[in-house]
Image (cartoon, rainbow, N blue to C red; front, side, top):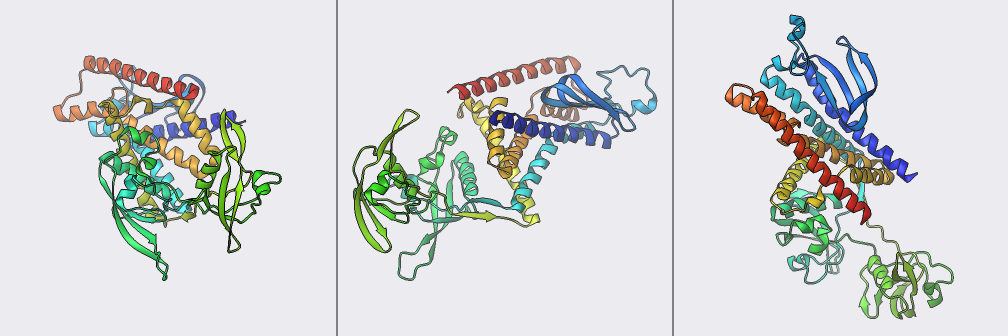
Length: 455
């Protein structure tokens, strides 16, 4: 069932993005007066088609589900010698270079517009996410040396307000790429008798991160982690080590073997790392302190020996629904799309100069896997995934590689500068080179997908 859901999620995501991309070409071609002969979803042999509209455009589904195309009236591909003067006016190569550029650019632009609208819709709907609140910070970490201790709520990054954890992570990724120092505005708990929060600013250097660090959990390298609730026990299971030791639901665990336990995750990690070992527990129950011993039972999970005391420990972080009014959501959607596009280009540039591994190139197998995972999580995650893939599709199509939209835009830009089109012979050579580059990239992507699948 999960496999079928993954395939369906992949087909829906890719199909919708291809349709939007090709509709961009189609709409602007029609607006410029160019005759469209065929609109195909998929490549290769046509398996279904119908003709509609005054031009009897053929709307088709082709056998290969990757990609699609819009076929226009083009003297380079069809014999136009017998056509009427009226039809010849609508032939693609007879259009001004600016119209041809607009038609070619419309596909990637449609993908960017889709991403903006999807992000804006999600921002208006509201996203349930963790607050950008920090867990206890490890000593000797970058965050600790900068002055963070844990419990701080991050309210702004470089003067830009943030509401949720993913916004904090995104801002730090961008800063890490630029090797810049980040200014964090924080609210930290006031230890004094008056309580409340203290406002502070922290300069967090992220220039110590390498590009390779960004491929994994780079926040951990900085010493930053999401705050978790205190180690308050949930349901205590019958005949488990916790019940036998005398632990009760609602107990607050404050220390193990005289080492403080900062939160529920620290408790889980300590218990899992101590199978068969006696743990001296200190805690609070109903306002009174208590101490007792518990021995986690040994259990093998995926070949690893871990300790369990059979008690539930709530680990869900503090959550917030971050929603924005329509205009603000639209602006935020545009900013997120722009930032994602720029970040994609920077990462591609770093791949070319060897700073980022080519292992980061993903193909259809990985994309399908992510499509299935996000679809199972929920609509918000799935739509966010589609928005990011739409951005990637737009950026990739704008790369100056022959056979891609970016390659055609490069040709037309040279035509604007020189006043004449690129010679057909040079265009044909570039076309073959472009196909070679794309095939190489596809082989690398599929190889990476297979390696991820196996290992």
